[in-house]
Amino acid sequence: MGWLLIAVSAIAFAALTQFAWQGRLGFAALALLIIAGAAFFSGRRNLSSNSRKPIDTIAKGLFTAVGIMALLRHRIQVDGGDPLPIYEAIAQYIQYVDPTTFFMFGFIAMAIKFCGVIASAFGWHLLLVGQGIRYPFWSAIMTAFLIGRFIGTFLPSTIGLDGYTLFEAGRYSNEWARCVTAKALEKFIGVTGLFLGIAVTLPFGYPVIEDVATQLGWSAPILATGIAIVAGAICTTVTIGLVRPVLLTSAVNLFGSILPGKIRTQVERLADAVGAYKGQVGLLLAVLVSKFITHFTTAVVYYFTALAIGVTAAQFWPITFGSTIQILGTVLSPTIAGEGAREAIQALLLSKQLGGVAQAVLSAALGFIAAEAATMWGGAFLWTRKPGWRPAYTKVDDEQVDYAWIDDTEDSGFDAEKIAAAAR
Image 1 (cartoon, rainbow, N blue to C red):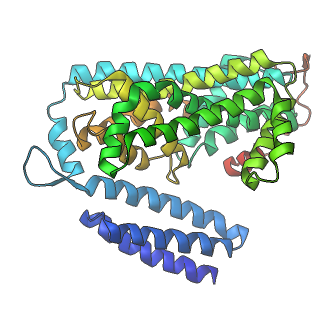
Image 2: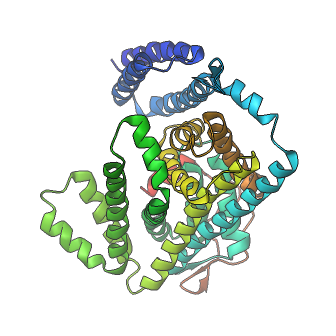
Image 3: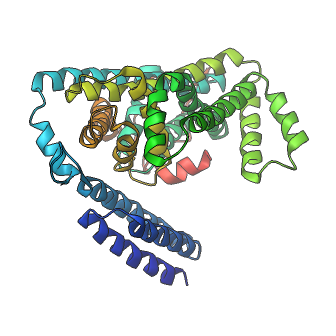
């Protein structure tokens, strides 16, 4: 039954691919997407665990490829002429981009992104320190982050980054339980840093909400209120949890019977993880600030990529706010490295702010390229990480470890999905 449903999904997706090639994105295409998705996930449940991994990889790859094709072949109106596929509109527009402006602001975007990566790595460093584990920051923590980002370019969501940084921390300290606790808390704080960015930029990004509400026929005040409630609730809950985890535990005990199961589980996990950092409130708040800086700088990158392609009317705050929403959507998307989803969401949110769909898609794609260019050289560290490599020091509870548990004759054993699953 499982394979039959997968076959149904494949047929529906093939029809959707034909629609995408023709640039026909309407209700029929949406219906095919729903059928393909429902059949795929229903069929997947009936497959063996060994069969799921290759099927998932193929599905993510196809979804990414077809998503990009659907986006680029979608027809838009350009300067009152006949509708053009987005890729043709981009080709026409890019001829007028000044190379000097492009490279100057592109370099600035890369530099800003790299600052955000340093902030994120520092947050992970602090969490390990809070667990009594210390590595040299630049030669171990930072290089692990760059390797993780390199691997993550080819994997969905944050599997590569989370998996590799957890792998190195656990491999050289042999304190897997502590590292998993640190990684679990990093995930909570990281998401909170993103929602904090949304909450901070929301008042300045209201024009973006008005644009989206107009497109969808919704009420801008209601949409803004909904975003504020969700972002505010997540930020408040996690911040309270960092400062006074006992309040979260008490709330779960008091309202546990009416909380949805998944929410209650996540709150309990947060409380347990924070409990391992008892008395280290300052450290946890410093981690939160570092993760806020990480996501904020990532959003700022898209302002500078807009300037790079000559959008001189680009406004800092609306673009930064819209980009924080786009980042959230990209993280949640089932595509490889967010490709396709990033550009589609940016087009929905910021096409008016950037002067057109082509500019929004080009700005988003350039933002991805700038971010990867700033960190792709992490691959060099991966290729030179020989089995015998060791950090300059690894201290657990202020004692240097002897690495006796590491067998240099064996493969490192890194499996992104398996390692990342341990942190969930």
